[in-house]
Structures are given as structure tokens and as C-alpha cells.
Length: 195
Ligand SMILES: Nc1ncnc2c1ncn2[C@@H]1O[C@H](COP(=O)(O)OP(=O)(O)OP(=O)(O)O)[C@@H](O)[C@H]1O
Ligand SMILES: O=P(O)(O)OC[C@H]1O[C@H](OP(=O)(O)O)[C@H](O)[C@@H]1O
Image 1 (cartoon, rainbow, N blue to C red):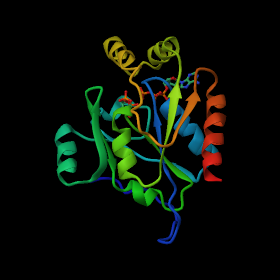
Image 2 (tube, rainbow, N blue to C red):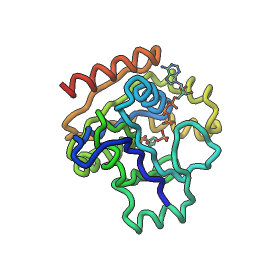
Image 3 (cartoon, rainbow, N blue to C red):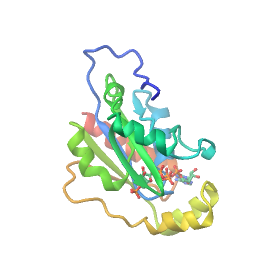
Image 4 (cartoon, rainbow, N blue to C red):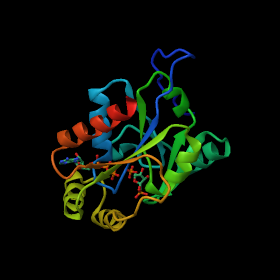
């Protein structure tokens, strides 16, 4: 059972905010940036993902499921998007459309590999590409301690995956420095697009 998206008190006539994909290499600060943005603007919502990651892994708020449960959800057409990465399965429930009602945007952590598909699925779709140097990524993944050394190396090897050609709205945020500065950069992008 997928926990329903919390749409607050948005009525059926409420405007729908854009889907804002936050993407970039492991360790770049996607979840940290999303958390900071949502705290600063409560009308910005974060989409809870369904992931075959162990419940105790920590970090983002996600719905942990087994691989069998994930396959059943795919078969039941629950997901608007799903993909595999890092040996895990990730799904974005179709409930995201409810979360968009009355929101200034819905932030979602997506794989760079599914962005063109996401652009087809969502009628108002933007991409925030978060960047940081390879040295910074390595230091952050090591300090975070969520993955073992081998998995950290595998994630770092994927860092240079390029964004696909053909994306219509892509904005870069440099998170090499203070997280607060990256949050301000991202807020300016989101607010400018809202105008
Ligand atoms: N600007 C920053 N300065 C210092 N540390 C940061 C900054 N941004 C994020 N971090 C830290 O770096 C680590 C990785 O951040 P986070 O988990 O948000 O990255 P991510 O891109 O979501 O990674 P993954 O894709 O692996 O989940 C965390 O420990 C986080 O607290
Ligand atoms: O390298 P790419 O394909 O862009 O992203 C790989 C995976 O990393 C991120 O998830 P998480 O932050 O590890 O949970 C993305 O959402 C994707 O699932």
C-alpha cells in the first residue's frame, strides 16, 4: 500500500505547481537542498519516493519496499516513473499529481537517466542540476557514511553522467560551497520561473 500524498487543504480547483527534478551525482547534496528549500517555502513540497533501500538506511524520507513489492507496484501501474540505479529500484507514484495541487512546486530526486521520460510524463517540468567537484563529492560521501567504501567508489564512478540533450528547462546550482548559498541560488531560480 502506498501512503497517499499529503496534499494539505488544496481543493479540486487549485492550481498545479511544476514538477521540479533535483538531479546530480551521488553526494552532491540533492536531498539536503530539497530539505532546505521545503523548510524555506512550505508551499514547495517534496515527493516521497518508493525505494528498495533498507528501512534503516536513513537520509531522505522514503517508502522502503522489497523487490517483490516493488515489482507488484509496477505491475499495478502505481508509478508515474520508475528506474534502477545503485542496485536499487526507485519509483515515483502517480500520486505526485495530487501533491502538485496548490503547491508552488513539487521537488523530486530523479535519476539523470529518466529526465527525458519525465519531461514527457509531466506537463510542467523543470530540472535543477546540482554540481560540485569530484573531490567534494568524495569527501561528502565518505563523511556521510551511508554506503561502504566499495559503494562510494561505484557512486563516484557515476558522477560524470551527463544530462541528456533535449531538456527544455534546466538550471544549474553549484553546491560546492555552503549549503545555504545553494539554497538561495535554487530559490531564486524557482521564484523567477514562478513570475
Ligand atoms: N553544501 C554542503 N556543504 C557541506 N556538506 C554538505 C553540503 N550539501 C550536502 N552536504 C552533506 O553531504 C552529504 C551528501 O548530501 P546528500 O545526501 O543531500 O546528497 P545526495 O545528492 O542526496 O546524495 P545521494 O544521491 O547519494 O542520496 C550529506 O552528509 C550532507 O549532509
Ligand atoms: O546517477 P543518477 O542516475 O543521476 O542517479 C542515481 C540515483 O541517485 C539518486 O538517488 P539517491 O540520491 O541515490 O537516492 C537518483 O534519484 C537516482 O536514483
